[in-house]
Structures are given as structure tokens and as C-alpha cells.
Amino acid sequence: MLIARLRFGVALAIFVGWLGWLALAVAKKGDTYPVSRAQLTNATHLVAARLTLGDDGLPVEAAVVESLRGDLTPDAKPTILNLANAIVVGGTAPKSGGIYLLALQYDGKTFRIAGLPRSPGTDPADPPRPLIYAWDDGTRAQVR
Image (cartoon, rainbow, N blue to C red):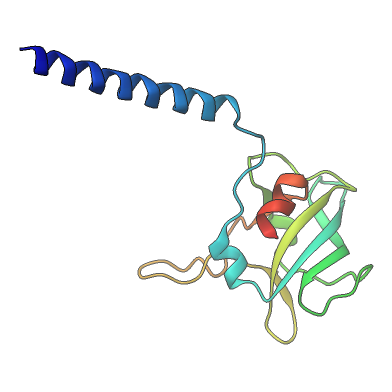
């Protein structure tokens, strides 16, 4: 009987320790959303770009601030076909003058914001609402 109580006490201590660790992890949770590794893998160019919004509040132009992968130079303004459909991860609307991480695909003529790689039964290569990421310290750390 003493052995059973001892085992129960050890199991209880481990369980309470686990709950404490989870509470600590939640308390330290930041505001940075995870960057999709699959989307970055599917991209040919990876840039941090300053967005300009049109009168309707949708992004119409991107000026490259920093090129992380590919041959786009800073201050380049590539034409991105599906830029107006882009949404920021986390559900916020893009801000004019804000800097965002764009994972771009180049097919030899045009740029598009990359979707996820193909998988059976889906065609995410051209998503209806492609994802972009706010270019902050958390996103920088994930990309590097």
C-alpha cells in the first residue's frame, strides 16, 4: 500500500510540474505568427517589401526593401499578380508603408505570392488568399 501511494505521489508531482511548464510557455507566448516553411520552400524569391495601398485599402504595389533570396534589388518594384488578394497572417489588414515578408514565385515572366506546394487532392499553388507576414523581429528570427 505504501508503494502505491508513493507511485501516486510521484505521478502527481510530474503532472503538476507539466501543467506548470505549460502555463509558463503560454505566459511567454509572443505575438509573432509562425512562418510557413512549406510556403518558403515553394518560393523562388524571398523579399521584405514596403506595401502601398490603393484607395480601396488593398495592396497595389510592393517596393523591395531587402532581398533575402533571389535577384531582386532593393527599391525594385516587381509586378505581383495576386498582391491585391494577399492577407497578413493573423487576420490583420496590410498597412500602407508597412514592411512585409513576401514569398514570391517567378515563372520567367511574372511574380506571384507563393502558395503551399502541391499535395494530393489540392491545388494550393495559386491560393485565393495568399499569406504575407509582418516583417518584425520574430519573423526575421524565423527566416534566418
